[in-house]
Amino acid sequence: MMIAAYGLSKFFPVRGAFRATTSLKAVDDVGLKIQNEQVVGLVGESGSGKSTVGRCLIRLLNPTDGEVLFDVPDSELAEYEKARAAGATERVDAIADRFSLLRRSTSELRAVRRLVNIVFQDPYSSLNPRMKLSTIIGEPMISTRFCTRAEADIRARELLGEVGLPEFFEDRYPHELSGGQRQRVAIARAISTNPKLLILDEPTSALDVSVQAQILNLLRGLREKYGMSMLLITHNIAVVAYLAEYVYVMYAGKIMEWGAKGKVLRDPQHPYTKALMSSVPVIGETRTRSILRGDPPNLISPPLACRFHPRCPVAFEVCGWSPEEVAEDLEFLVGGKYYGTFGDGVRLTVEGDRTIIIQGTTEVQKIQELVDLEKEDVRSLKSIQAIDVADGATSVRLHEAIEPEMYPSPDGREVKCLLFRLDASAPAAMAPRSAG
Image 1 (tube, rainbow, N blue to C red):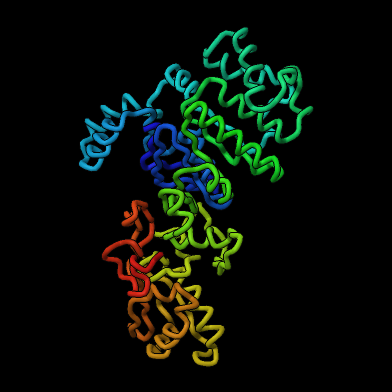
Image 2 (image 1 turned 45 degrees about the vertical axis):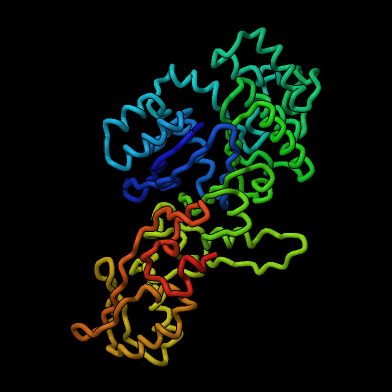
């Protein structure tokens, strides 16, 4: 196994009012594996945490929590996972001490830097404008003591030719190059130390479409020649379809689904993956696009349980609505759309983590009829478990939310959705067998 991450999290501190400090949960409990000589795609919309995962994997950012094992034999990895599941901390630590990137000292990490590298998204800002191309490409070789300066100069010229640029470009500066040429230089720099793992962070998003194809062909050729493992971070499904073998789908700091490329892209299972794939046009096919309501969540205060549930078209009782969310929707209906039924004086308050009190009415049957009528469009109402009269007011009790895990699918993929939980209290029409 080239690299394996377990419970990887990255929280950024955020200063709030009155000097209070909270955190933005950019990456939360992410697991990811890349085999030797394998290309893995990591896809998701902007702000999902994809780039943060890539930086944490190679310690450009230090994770808040989790573990990252690098270049670990499969037998050792299997033993590590078995010990981790059994809570055998001594054995877990013994294996992690040998293979963990997070436990390496500065000197040990310098040696690892030869074996992992990254190509950044913006070719215009990732190259030092004051350096010649030969210096830019040679810098990693010298800083990691991969070779001498004289050898680095020779290899820089060779690498320019390898990425499709003439050798006389070695004396040019970045501002003299086009965007595609700059990205070729960035790739040459990244492969200069013969890395085993290459992180590609949106390598084509800042380029014209015609140039994108050239860069993808270059990356495919380099991967075949050097046998590198690659993590391809992108929001472009077409890029993943062309280059990757396995795909991880990310949303709001969490992995939603992962599996073989063909299965995930052709037959998505998670509701978010389905919505993502429905936006991709396919020649000769007519698709019904799934339009997601609302915006991605605020990761300073993310949704309870499933992070996708506020936008999910098939969310049900236990997906994670908070009483504040349900109270807001109920207040709009009772005090707005159905004002003629309930009139003035109706006020909603939240009590505890699962109860809403409606003051000013004890019309339980009318509220229940309202919920039954609106819950398909206002899906937060599905989380209502019981409506009763208490102390001259109406008490609305919610279902207890369930945090989804990565559930295995029969075809080998894993999906973080309660529809795939065998004992999920979902309607029969939403059972896992029908989710695809």
